[in-house]
Length: 239
Image (cartoon, rainbow, N blue to C red; front, side):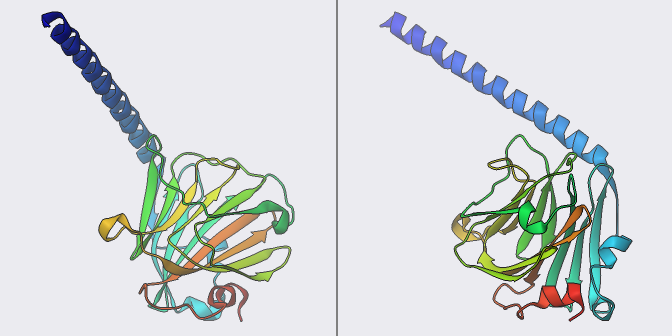
């Protein structure tokens, strides 16, 4: 009996050591990731770059209040904008390897709920009922953009070689650059009671200019409000 007890104590001690070492390793990785992430940052600003500003046509600019432009030394800026006091607009640029048709670049992967990876550091921009999250670290020029929509409620809107719009109701959408890869961008509803996330109406627009694709999202500030049809498209195309 004593031998069995000793073996159990030893086994328990070994398991405890493994757990402690695992925690220390994860903590060390997190600390290193956080330090690297902070070293990437440039000071936030409230001024849009010229190429982001041109996405909002002149007659809509007086309704646009820039909440934040998160800048980085190694990746493109994320711009968060309050539009017409009732909506939240985000803009982010994705660079392509070569100039090609937008229809060939975008790949829809429905019913994917992307989550943050434990060993990856992220940047978060708050937008009321939802969050715009992007992975830290550099982003190489890409061939494809995989879009994950955690919903069956998707309406494809206006489509041509350089512009595609979607209207949907979801609690999670994501951007990946390879199939089944870790999400580079996650737009998700905030968690409420019992761990459920807010489901929200959202307009999504992809606009290609030369060898870059601009990714824009528009949501209502009040989660129960709807978005006028094609509002995001109108903002971008001066309708």
